[in-house]
Length: 324
Image (cartoon, rainbow, N blue to C red):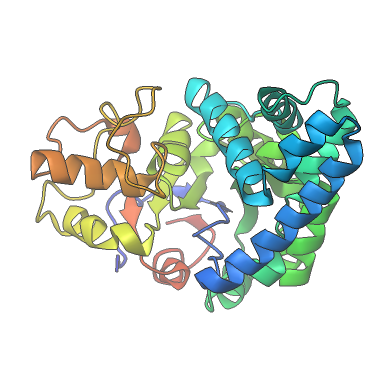
């Protein structure tokens, strides 16, 4: 765990800490619970879809397309759009319309497609608990004078998402005006615009901000574009590789793999089941497995300034807002 003094922080003014949400502040419950909640939302979406279908032919199409297939097809359509243009949030209602057209179901109104997508939402409080150190860490950082914000890529936003944050207790620390959600803004990390949305609301320049997140591509590269101090909290599945980076056992300290191979825009043939080309898990495993060592041609824009294991590690680093 990093300890002060930290050369890259010395003399730098830090007044704001931005957080990602998924796998940074919360995590998914066990697979059985997740599948139960997801199946319930799948059933709601299919029931809504059946209400829209009038012809016998279309009814047959629906009967052979259970909820999981509907979800998976929409998810793949959305991911295809993201791979083509990762800086912008896809129009998820339009993605539903496209999937239904592929199934031979035409003429579904946009508002109906949006309602089907909303039915697929899995609410946060029942499915993704906070890490146990999150609320106490946020309270301590706030007490130390840091302004706090959120920058997150999510397909579902709006009032239900704000309600979920309230239920989890996060709105005690994050003003809704300081929360940037890609679904509501139309832009995604690493697009600098989504970071600036929160920073401008906080009246904080990027040079005085920290970004904490689990994604090298979205959080670290995105923050680096603006000169934000970046802190990588890797997923447990890539924590071992992250430790090698931090200790210099695999390459020089704090260097991370290049995305030049793993983010070319087309879906490669060797993506393991359950992973996607945009996942750090895939990128790290892909490079490690193929090369047997870390890519030596590192890109500066995806090197985190620091690597932590737990959110509470921030308390050993940022002891007071202002000059570090």
